Amino acid sequence: MSVLIGTTPTRTFDDSRRWAREGTALLTGAIDGLSAADFEADSQLPGWTRKHLIGHVAANADALGNLISWAETGVEKRMYASTEQRNADIEAAATRPAEELREWYLRGAGELDAAMDRLTASQWEHEIITAQLVTRKASDVPWMRAREVCIHAVDLGVGITFADLPDDFLLALAGEIRTKRGLSDDDLRGVAGSLPDVAAWLAGRPHGLVDAPELGPWL
Image (tube, rainbow, N blue to C red; front, side, top):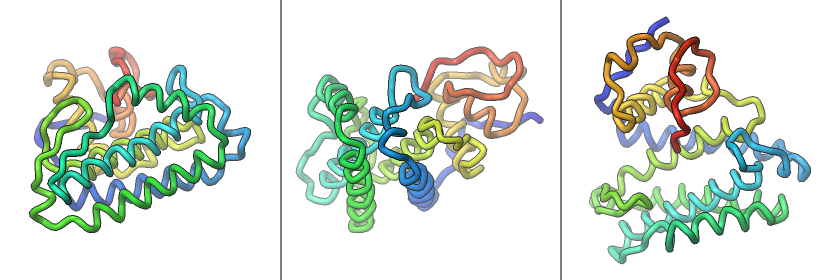
């Protein structure tokens, strides 16, 4: 089956908030099912254990919370002090006890959702700067979080696949990655498969497509 992946955004703000909540619920359920020993196992991301991954997602909630605070107060608050500090924090997270990581993840996810609930329509229009030094509106934060929780729920390696993610999320994700990778219609012409497989391929994750060119990891 061929999947038509366009370059026009296919998401709304309400979509992004819904996907962030659905992805958080999916990831939270997966983390809740892990034993302390399970935290030590490898994730599906090369070089990262599940502790690295969970620490990263927990830190991401705090970092996006900084952007929401910026939009709410008008006082600049960047996601991370630096790329080096971000990477060091992830490595440090991999040494923390499993229950401490679990609590950090749950606290961060809850606080971020509550902070987003507080923003007014005008505050969502406030400009913020991402970790990639891109200026965006605060209204993009829910989409940024949705990508993190949905994709990393798969990366956790507990049996969740791209087929478990909402179809409309996968269409929006695939369209964004196609644009960022600069893929033309010709690049995609020979790629045929289910939407979850195409999205996984575009994201540089394991997929079931045949003869699709290899792409490096994204996100």
